[in-house]
Image (cartoon, rainbow, N blue to C red; front, side, top):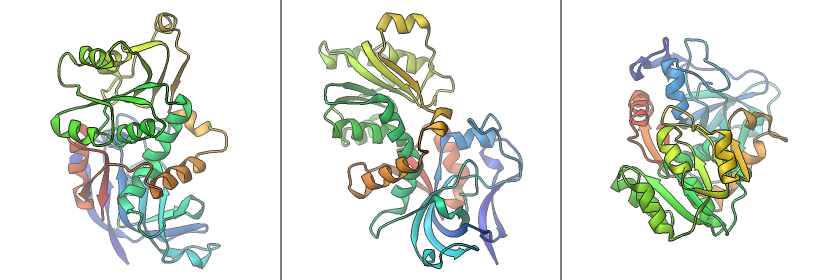
Length: 328
């Protein structure tokens, strides 16, 4: 039996991703096989593909099939797995570069979350990874109705969820997005102020829109010079949570920055998530519950599985909206 998957034999540009026929994976003890409907794509996947880095896990051995999140239907089970899983609609986080860009993927049974009828596969994929990280960021920030929250890249997978979550607790939300289409999408999420960060004087426009109020929480997923410009809007006693640097460089902070603003908290979400007391499964469950209740609804953009290279190129050029997924 065969199926199709994306395979990578060398590090390099998006073109190294090949759509090929491969032997169908067989679930081992404690595993199930999922007939994949949707798999998730991350910006870090592009860094792994290029050979630049793989986050806290390092680079995988080649050849390999990328992908860490899948949703679909269980079609086979390994030894010591309850047969009742067969036919279940599920979503799972597989781990870094663990075979998700495929028509068939294997997952540990303990990583599965059963999905109720009516929950969209693409949205479930968005929440199992990006959603759980969003909740970890919110856990660190402790946003309340008294906060003024600044969300850059608000049309991205995490940005869109952060806007919704902050509004859910009654915070005043300033969101930044690139281009008129993304600005309109973010405005539809309920942000109080939405500005185009491509406009040169956007920090002045933020100050004007706040009318004397100061940003008290800044979520930084951009880093570099744009992240620094946003950080300068943070008021005394504010909090900053860093969860990435899509600009290519982390946000630079000095001891002087901490003294000048008397920051009440700073946090970087990354390797510390792996040491979170109790693990990550409760965050996954909470993210999926928020989706089922329509409290958090991710934006998604789909590409065919065969066009994984195009999805990578679009991510790298900021040509996507929300969570990028591949449809098998």
